[in-house]
Structures are given as structure tokens and as C-alpha cells.
Image 1: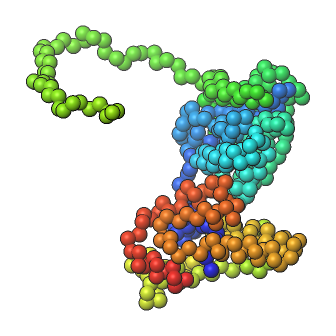
Image 2: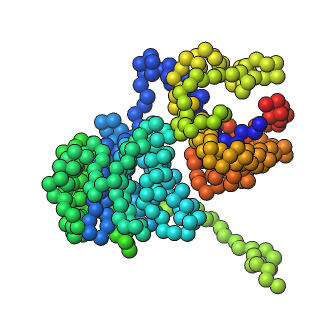
Image 3: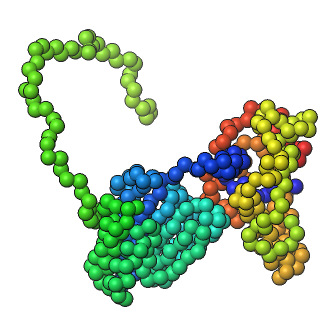
Length: 272
Length: 139
């Protein structure tokens, strides 16, 4: 009987060796993680998503200005915390699937579709795909905001935070969020929440990214606030012209002799 | 598979067999696949691997069982018959596997999985066609 099902696509031939090594005490290498503060907030006209921009590899900052707000569709974006590779790959995969689904249905894609695809995929991998996501967007039924945890559970809330800086950001949200805020108030609240995460959590840092999604437009505000710009160095380490004198100048022409020969009627396309 | 409404694969006893790495003499082919220990494979913790490999089959089984309970035995039988007709393809050699009719029947013609992206990267085109065909027809 032919097998109509496909293999999961991953090669498990090293599993035996890896299990043996972890038993003997050799841990797996650390993946680049987005320590992170990511937030999402519902306001009068739509959704504001916010994220910091630091990617860490253990105790070291791997990327000082990474992008954590990923594209799903034109009006749906997803912030990702957890293992950086997992969030990027998962969001890219779901973005492709959403595009195919949208072409098949012929309708504007919905946020619940993306949420269902993400939660079903993460549940299948039993939490091994370390992606904690904040999914937000506006579709034909209105604005929606979801969180998706690595094991596949989801929540639908008006304001959410995820990542290591989520407690600091949630403190700001809990004291400042009101229903039906204006765009400026919502953006300031999100910037304050991310800044709280940046300054009070070691896993988050650098700049603030924001994304404002409304029914008619999506605005990606990359580095909307840069509270951690490096100060300019006090001394200049370049040598000015004339610091050393030069003794001899020799310019050598690489082309010694040039002769052009035209072959045949030319290279033009034959349009007769 | 016996009819069941399970959505998630069960954690039942795993089986390791020599069949997938056997050479023409019937034993494990160490030259091609490297050393192998069935005892170690049975004892090891392979829960994620089993879960992923049985995922599609388990979900499909649940759907077919529901259809059997609602419409009668003929419904899943017809679907499985169509799949078998379409999947038995003696002409296609082993690389590349692409059966779009089967994809449409299984409902995966409009989705992209990690399988589509990663499968086949480990080994290039095999140079020994005789061995491939032998393997295929012996199974």
C-alpha cells in the first residue's frame, strides 16, 4: 500500500546521539533568542503593536537593531518573542499560507485565520518551536488582537504583552489603558510600555518599533524612538592629510595599447 | 488504522524494524547507513519524532471515522479508493516526488509545510537506480 502521508520534513537521525549527550551532561547550544518586550494595544480605529529591537545570545547582544514586527498580510502583523529563528520562520510560513488562502477564497484575510494556523502548528510541535507571538490586525470584522504561546494556547484581549519584559510593560498598560483611545494616546502608551521594558529588563534594549494598523492603512514606524543612541566618540582617530610627507609618486597605466576591431555586421538583434 | 476519534497521536509502544535499512542479504546495511542499535532506539525518548510522523495519519483517521459514523462505511471507502488509485504510480522514479493529484485529494494543494521546504536536502539524487527500484517493489 502506497504511503499517502508525507514525512514531517525534519531529519531525526541525530536524535539518539543528542539524547545520549544530554544524559551525559552536555547541553544543547544556545539559540539566538529575542529576550524581548512586545506589546499590542487596541484603540478606537484599530491596533498598535510595539516591540524593542534587541536580540540576545545568552548574555551577549547578538543584534542591536533587529526587527521583531513581522509581516503576515497587508493589514495583519505579528510580533515575535522567543527563539528568533522560530519566530521568523513560523511567521514567514504562515504569511505564505495566508496569501495562498486569500487567493483561494478571494476575500480579505482574517486575523482568526492566521491565529488558527499558528496555534495548530505550534501545538503540533509540542512547544519545541519556541515562538511566543502577539498577532494583531484589522479585517472585515474589525480589529483583533491575540497572543499565542509556544505550546499553542491563545488569548484574545484588548491589550497584551509578551517576552521577558512583559511584566514591566504590563504594569504601564494596566495603569494607562482606557477603552477607545485616540491614536496619539495609544502610540504614547505603547512607547512608554516598550521603554519600561527596555530600561528595566536585561533581555530587552535599544530602540522602540511600532506599527499602527487601521482599516485603511498600515503604518510601520521603524525606530520611532531611539533612547539608546551611542554618544559620539570624543576623539577622532583619523590622520589628517599631510601628517606624513610622501617622497615619490608613480601612476601606472594598466592599458598599454588599445585597438578596436569590429567583427561582422555587429551584435544587433536580427529583426528582419 | 483502526477507527478512532483521536486528534493527537497516542504515546504507544514504538517499533523499530530493520526493514528500512536492510540490504539484499537481509541484515542492516552498515556500509550505507552507519552503525545502528535497535535496543538503543527502543529505549530512547523519541516522543516528538513519533508525534510528528503520525500526526497527519491520526488527524486523517479522525476525519474518516467521523465520516463513517455520519454517512456510513462507503464514504471513507470511496475516499481511500481514490487515493490509492492516484498514489500508485509505477512510472515515476524516485526523484523528484511530486504527485499533485494526491495533494489535491489530501487537501494540501493550497498550503505550504516545512516538508515542502526542507524535505530532500539531506541527500542529493541517488546514483543507484536499481537499488531504489528494488527497494520500492520489495515493500
